[in-house]
Length: 291
Image (cartoon, rainbow, N blue to C red; front, top):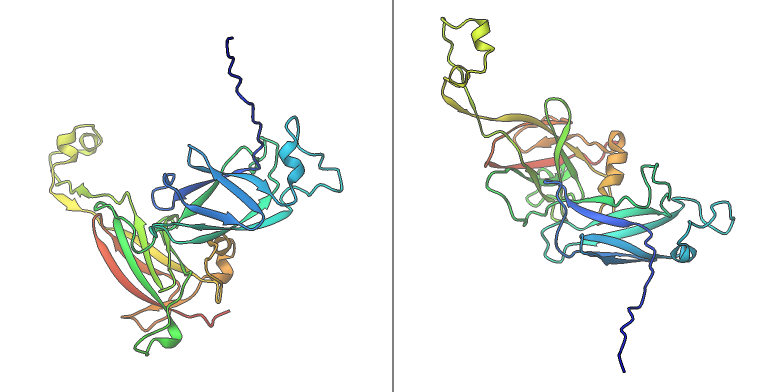
């Protein structure tokens, strides 16, 4: 008798997915992380997405294949009305633990920005023990409470969001302090060098506008330093782990004044210069008493 193998068909409906990305390089994190939340179940797939396979209160959505549950039904929750607090932890400790609030159910309409078929991007901040590329510009910051500046062992400030902006006030990098108040900010892509063109009196404006590389790069090589500004955002007494997205949503209220170890003046931004392959260390004392 001939045997016939029949594959069992398993239909599953996903309620959304998380894509974990490195905050510095913006690339997906390609190894296993621990993702959990009360009332939610996740499973990782081969695309390194953490798919939401179950959500408390959304059981009817798991069997609705042809169309989503009728939103006009009073027994069905409105889009984004169910809140779940997610914790993401790196078992190797290369990324800081962070929290995230998910609002479910997601919108089934592909025309909307928050539709269910679009993975939710979740940036992860590097920990001070992360692996570093020698071509990156690195800032290592120690963040303390200003009230303890004259104490030998000042109180560390955890969950401080340190943001780096360029001359156009565009945020180009960021980091977050851990429970010890230590933070690492990685800034890739800083220019390595530039050519200082030597002026030639025999060249006119038309010659300088040409594509002649010998004319444009006739001077010595100059190592580049890129001026940036550092700002600090802190939610006083916020529990650990911190949700950086909540901090970003309240920048105006949570941005703090601070001072460096070498300067007695309180400031709201610190001027720095970045250089490829260079690591600089700073100590910051944050005024946590300001409203």
